[in-house]
Length: 199
Image (cartoon, rainbow, N blue to C red; front, side, top):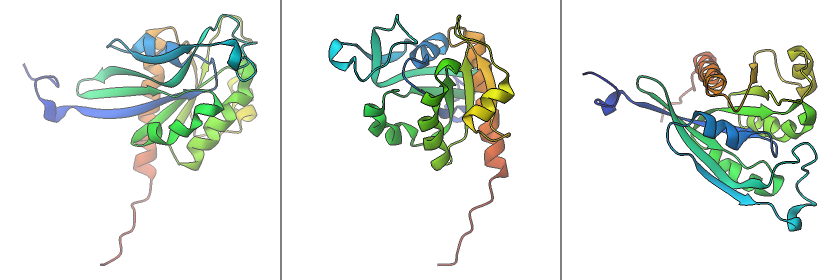
């Protein structure tokens, strides 16, 4: 049987960042799609950090990612995505450079109730020219907004994909990841070839 698992040379690994603000659903997304038991570095939130982490929009949240989440999903024969969920709080942003290294793209998971939390992530990715899409997490009690209004509020370009995603639903997450991979490939194809100078 000719398959990716029996022919390692045909396996294409790709690193994807799952980024976004605090409590937006990154750990949930990785857990919903990963075909392996996801690695999570969640720690119980304490009163010591209560002045740093605003849980107004996520009153049931009692733990937070302090390093990263990690999962893996085979999207198609030979294409394996390695998912790295970033910590959302600014005090852990020093880890982003390491997590971003080698990534083909990023999913910016956003909550329409707290869109400003997405700005630092978007600025970071645009500054490093990392392809990304914005996925609006479909929280049960969040107001649904027109995608054009969300795009305008986030000030993202027309060629940056903006999709709806339920981070709890495997199929929804899978569709989001496929859209990101296609976007990253298109960006790569459009990128001008790097000029080389004679030695």
